[in-house]
Image: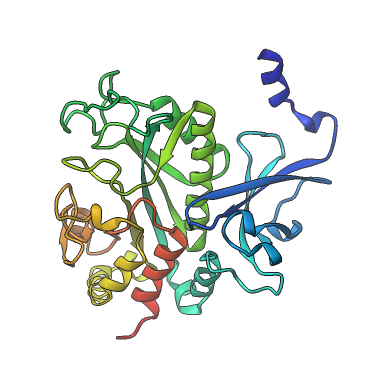
Length: 356
């Protein structure tokens, strides 16, 4: 095993200019992440320097067998924390051979919104709080829970420490450092309310880069759980009953909101979000109705309300923002399995481009 570890950790830049690029894309479910590697002749510094590639879409539920080729376009690159050196991770989106985005390519539509002059001028900032659950591989039950049984009630686990309260911290810390290595603007981690559930935050990041970074952070996390023999779940309500669900709270601000008088801009933006509540809910993740019950720090899925420092609201405004008269707000509705390309671009479109 030590020889295997030595070979995995070989620094190939000592002997060759070639690098390994791991191309990453989103599969047919819209949540499953796929990847494969290729050798490139030398280091690259920009996605435009990378070749397009293809994959068998009939094996990912994205193309029929008789016309199975899907083309992936490199869109963002990150240092590879697994292979290290000058090797890279490449976030891609997917197209037909004719150049049309396939249905699961949500990045293409998001890029159109984020390239609108009005949106560019507002310098949209996002901070995304990605919650997730670690499951025991063979029983699909949260780590740290007795098999077929339950731990003590919620209370001691949120930001908890100790062998009887925090389960999976080695995975969480490995992911934290790997994301920093990859250049992802990961801003923190914490244990969540339900034992075996954790959260990492990405941001503040501008525009579509926030979504790229969340997807690559998810990829890195799933690779680490693969190594650890643990299953990663983004189910918004992995355990029924008196247990918190898992969300992806999305903090948001525009340039106008961050400047003097921004609180009035925030209130107008929240009013617009309320008018489009149903459309946003329908795009905020599968199974979200199991999470948004009005309990466990959520608003009911059919109700839109906002409040200052209210974690039972659809939109929460921080006390600091109210006092400063400017800042950001938090959309608490997105589920943990939401597509960050959809959520970030939809919030920008509703609050900036939509004129009701």
